Length: 567
Ligand code: ATP
Ligand code: MG
Figure 1 (spheres, rainbow, N blue to C red):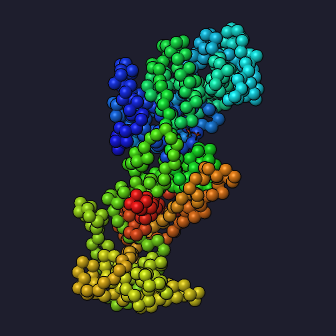
Figure 2 (tube, rainbow, N blue to C red):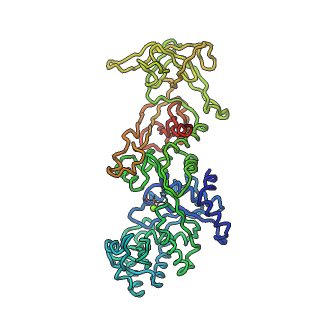
């Protein structure tokens, strides 16, 4: 994991360091947590929060908890819990034995709520949702007190208990914190802390029909677990006074249930160009079949990026380069792609595959003969050794490496022109054979025996070098070519139309029958390659369909980020 240098320079690291040096933590170590709601898959934005929390704990020899924030039974499912754990593990963050669920503390939280009631700091309110909103006031007007605000402690305790017992229907009444209806912060105007919801929970079943609200649940859970630094995204800034109110009260009224006065610190959310990141939108993409699932390789989900072929290291590298700040920003997808290219450049073995093949027949090749050529697996890396690639008189090359009527600067194959076949010979195109519709079906070429790669005595100079696959020896694979899921840079910002209107219809192009050199047949699912001139590819271990080995293009070779950088 490479997060250290980044974490060393970010403002949260500096803040924690200061806390440690000042002895604010007492005998506690730095303790962070990642608190996902299991209502969808994790995305690359969540990866920032996971890595930030995990890395900070690691650097300070502290602890990192995984806590599912499962207080909304309607949207939450076990499938999401499982995928989230799997993705966090894959990212390299280790919660050791500290896996928790907010629902583990429902009983303690109920008791805390009772203590708030007893202290006159919470009350059962019978106003409807709309009335509560109306009474809340606005930023410029103070709120109005609920007529139920002055209920006696006894009545409140009784009603709250009956809420729990299921005596009232959904939405019939709520428990509210009794704070300040004139507060300049709307979150402090007697926020709702419990609601009635007769819904089965994925862990507690039908045991509860009242559920705590996030703003009550989250700070209490943090303090209960002894989280020292509660890091969250910037939209919670206005909730911080309420966070502190809950923790202060927990410490005062229920000290045996809390281990530490956790402190909340906010950081900017990570956004990415050419994609959407809100779970609601990602869910729509899945439910309305714009993609094949949460783990579709075009999705910005961790599961999707895994299937696309990204590595944990490339994601950590990306996070490190983007950095953490308080100001919202949108990171460039090109930078993420640059990170994986940079990694694979020196680690991915090379192979040849022809995505859109046309056949070449070498008319002067000795019939039936096969010649073996030696090629570097990773150029410049001797430890990666070489592989042998069979060459014969019938080959596939890319259809667009031939042009019948080429412009002057086309340095590949054309009638009467020469090109080098990578690692083999220079060939010359003598004729293009066509079918009745005029489509080229075969290119007849001759080779020059003097031009063997590495033993060229011909003195010929050709500019173009193209890849090829021997027909007889080809291994057949399926290739998925991915492009951006959206055609515009900021699909989230488009207000006037539905975001799905900007989906790129070309985001997936499938090549069903791709000849590749035979080494592909021995490759392990889950491995990554550079297909010469075509990009970096991932051997998908769990393709959605098809019998053939499936290779997903992670990224093409052209690095637009490196270009920007070098300007
Ligand atoms: P939604 O998209 O439904 O608002 P969410 O993305 O906030 O939900 P959670 O499961 O609550 O989903 O997120 C878990 C943690 O990840 C939270 O602490 C949240 O602050 C953080 N997080 C979520 N999205 C991002 C993001 N884009 N960048 C950084 N952190 C994020
Ligand atoms: Mg959230």
